[in-house]
Length: 159
Image 1: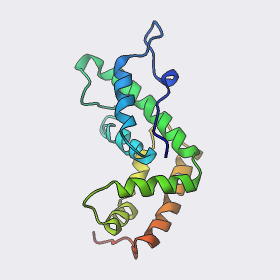
Image 2: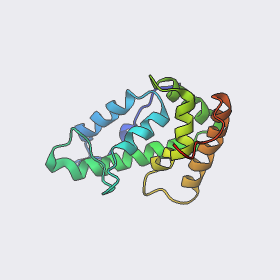
Image 3: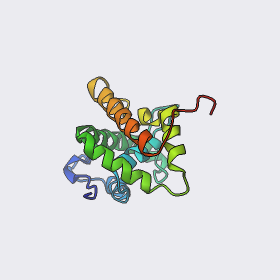
Image 4: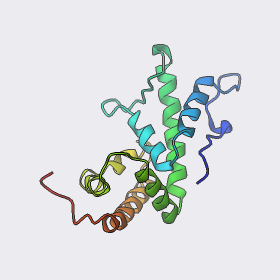
């Protein structure tokens, strides 16, 4: 799988048209994540569920608004790339993501995904309509396959 490259032309620019170096830091952070799905998990994890703002540990107080806007933009970009991938590529990417998770029983992971539907929280708030639904339906189709692969009978309603 090719490594992720955040295109410099898509990064927000300063008033003089220069790329903010902090934006390049985020691009480098994302480049270390091997999977598209993993990048979505990472970016969605930076979004505060109470405020909807993105919060990055390296952002100074004065730069938080800029950081939030930039991370929102990057999240939207990564999601739009993800949603355009064919189902087979998404499945391979998720398989790679799963193999990178240590010390988790695969069947328990798939059971948790079926019960908790964390994939629904990976969609940027600005994405509505067909793209949101395509992501959810594609992921649920992949979960159906993974459920069989890992021998998950059905989500445990008591868990």
